[in-house]
Amino acid sequence: MFISFEGVDGSGKSTQINLLKAEIERNGIECVLLEEPGTTLVGLEIRKLLKDYEKVGDLSSVTELLLFAASRSELVDKEIKPVLAEQDKMIIVDRYIDSTLAYQGYGRGFDTDKINYINDIVTQGIKPDLTFLLDCHPFQSIGRINKFRNKDRFETEGLDFYQAIRSGYLEIAKLEPKRIKVINAELPIPDVASIIWDITKSCI
Image 1 (tube, helix red, strand yellow):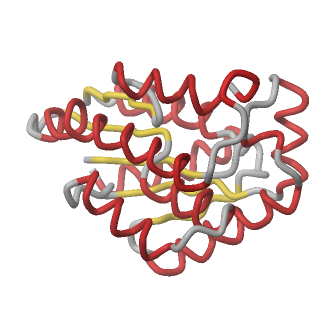
Image 2: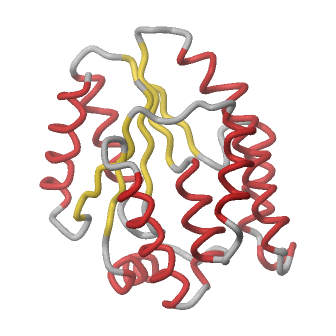
């Protein structure tokens, strides 16, 4: 089974991913956790470029899009496909195709049809069986970022950028309601984790 987590920065993805992984493993199933961009050697270098605003400066929307696509291509080829070939494992990926649509499409204004075309190429048609969209108001997500960590390239953007991304995510979810489950990330952490686990175990 292939699960992805989506949401604006500060929505609590990392916390919920780790809680779900622990619950899956408590039930005797091996779970592989992957991160995008990252995980592979190429992905980690691309992650550094994308996050280091002081070193790289402004990137065009096309450059940004293609860097994410290159990282995803490596992740699919080097990690996702080999794990999916082993039928006794589950994969959780922190961000995947929907992030590009939300951030580069709805956030940056890049043509979503072109993004879908690129995504189809780099993923080789591999999509998650289940996607959790952690939804919260940008005021709350930005507040969490300001409280707990330094901002990266995306997190320095204004409120309008994050509102556009959130709206984009919700539009994407409407198109694929069977795959994408919208979770209220403003609920207490244990409540969110319980909802996610209930949905997951019903699909295993």
